[in-house]
Image (tube, rainbow, N blue to C red; front, side, top):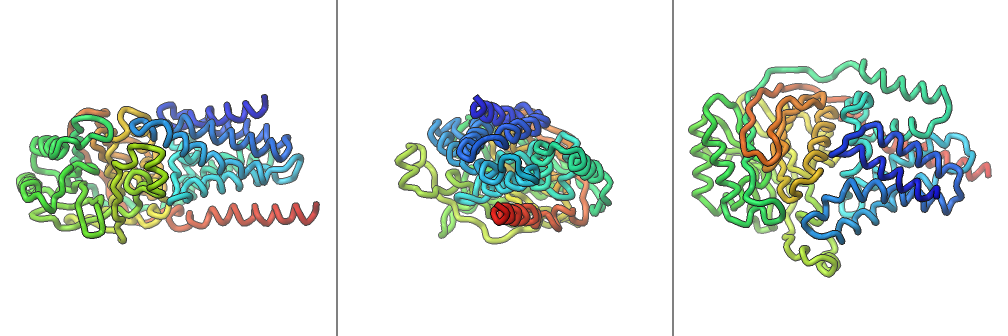
Length: 457
């Protein structure tokens, strides 16, 4: 019965993610998980922790199999659930410092989620669920890792003083001096053109996605300092289609605005997922560096093709090698292309005036993936102190302030343009400066404490 309750606790934790966004749920779920496993035998702690991970991952990541079948979704979840056994390994019956051990090992769980295998898939990290909670104040001072640690610690502590200390840290985070300096604002138009059909065949009709975004752009007048299209909005190779190239340039000239588009181009090394800034010509280019495993490249291709017939439809992309700071007038910006949002390493280098996120959600239909990705973008806005222009083919295109608030938004699956002012900033957050050290800060004491426990045994 207790082991079944750990699975139920995982399901409760999953409701912290969109579409439910119950931020209190992961805290309660981790408290249930810890309360159960701390009194179990080693073997049962392992089983219970695995079941918790399974209960969390299956509902929160179900959208990964929406168009490719249930097998990849199940394989992903059953494999990643094994990471959740870490607290079962480190927590011991009636041992001191169990609350710290539980929190530190949970940081290890989310480190594994975001790094292995094949560069990881850290989409369902509990640290992404607190954007609308009081704990969100920790994002600029310690990031997702700090949020995950505090959640787990609060869930596990049973003593008054540690609880007060943890809550005080959350409260004091609101008064940490802001290292971000507000500058000027820039007028931007975000174009959500839509697609002819949801799913893997969103670009089955050549130029259809491009034409939809072009038509929305033709409705725009002058006065915008930048126009942004989403990832895959140009569904035909710009480099080999001069007509497409010409039409983008013409709209840039007509509106007196540079246009940032997203498209796939061919190169000798393979396909490239790129953001291209147009004015009178293609001036600056960024190539996606953090590719999506099983989406833009296929690890273990032979095995994958044997498991799923859809695997043969995936063509391997070539990753970019460097960041690009786009320059327009007196401003600079950087763009993250879809999956790059979940890479903590990229967060630390986002130091331009504002941030752009370009994504194509059409391949996941009308699922919670759309809102989950938007919430991750809101988290990154707080972690970096950057205001974000978030633009998608199908939604939810939004302007996000650097405190994670959605300022303006286009409804899902509604072709339209969103025009607004985005503030530019200067400086870096504490998360950007020191956040990369936090995993080691929590995990090294955990290992030392484990060794000390064995010595005293």
